[in-house]
Image 1: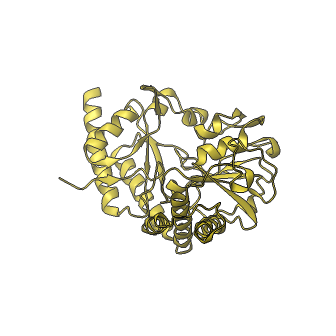
Image 2 (image 1 turned 45 degrees about the vertical axis):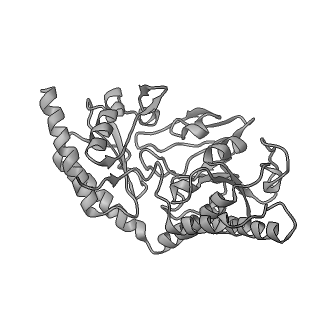
Image 3 (image 1 turned 180 degrees about the horizontal axis):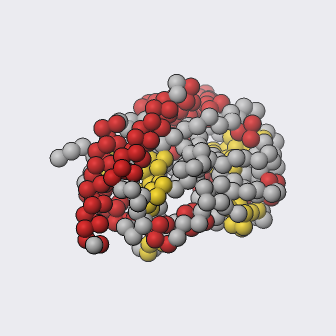
Length: 348
């Protein structure tokens, strides 16, 4: 049986060796970061080292990096109680707090008229489309772009940004809210006053240590231009898919995209069916549509881009990573093409 091929890096990236090593080291640290004795100070040192690592990798030197349980909690902390608007392409963690009233064009790009009252993601998880971030945004979701493309929070002029560790090879269950130093923000979880009074509760030291190490390693990969090779593989994949299925539609291809992301659709061939078929064949991918309470719903991102129902429901996302090889890509394309031929034969 062939080894499985993981092509769902936008959902979560495999844990980096650097993150694993940092987490194991942190496990041996007995102190609480809030304690003033030697053990506590040692734990605090691990915490603050990770904070510096994340800030440096994110281009947020001089900003406050608040550690939380993930980007979802970061979005809640940054957006709760605020009347902000955005496009209907934002991740559910952000969409839950905003009015989706900003226009989205056919390439997935959003027009922002009033940045101070708006949120805008840096890159979309489904299509990979990268946005032009206007100066003064209330918040940007940098979860997908962090570690894949050069990004500097200090250059965006945004008031806040959210990021998540597991998207760049850190552990699951830890993320951060980033903001200019001294920003007044009401805590949603109150108690001991940890994280500069913005998020009480003893910090997840092990996860945070892994986050810092992963962020540092991700920055080194960007400096080495490793994602340029992944973009070449993504292009090889799309060429192979287009040759096998001339009717295929690539979503957001005319816009700048993340180097690893391809979202494409064969209208009439359900995305969730493709995901199951590819899973049985040994490939992990995602559908462009999402499942909620066991019911399949169309991708609102693709619908916002003007895709019809058949196209939106037939979309899949293939997201590559630093461990992906050309053999992986070609094996997937060939396997997908065989299933597409079977679908056409059944539909005839």
